[in-house]
Length: 138
Image 1 (cartoon, rainbow, N blue to C red):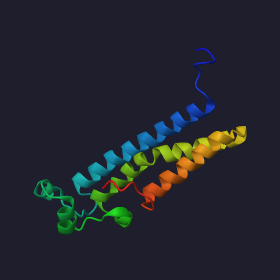
Image 2: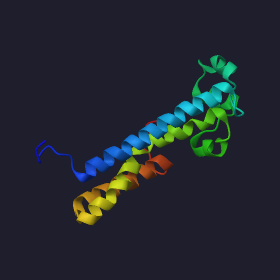
Image 3: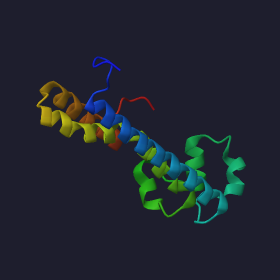
């Protein structure tokens, strides 16, 4: 591998963190699924009733089941059907986590353009994830 095609320190760090976060998120999803299906924790929506809700609109589903919306799921992590949300959130936050981990490398190198780009991206993604800013899509 030539110097020109060799991955940078930042790329290697980003990739290794992405792998760990991705596998951890996937692991949480799998474990959460089994906890839900096996009924190891109480559920908001019982497994046997899922087919009843397949054709419902989201609004009706939420109203009928009492499933939390927005960040309300955080207070229900003791529920089997909500626990796997943690894996989804971890996978969705993977980019932010990787950027935060790589940022000190750019700071150490005093690479101001990349520092600014990363800081702006991190701030925008966190604000979007929090619901403070949105694109107005749905």
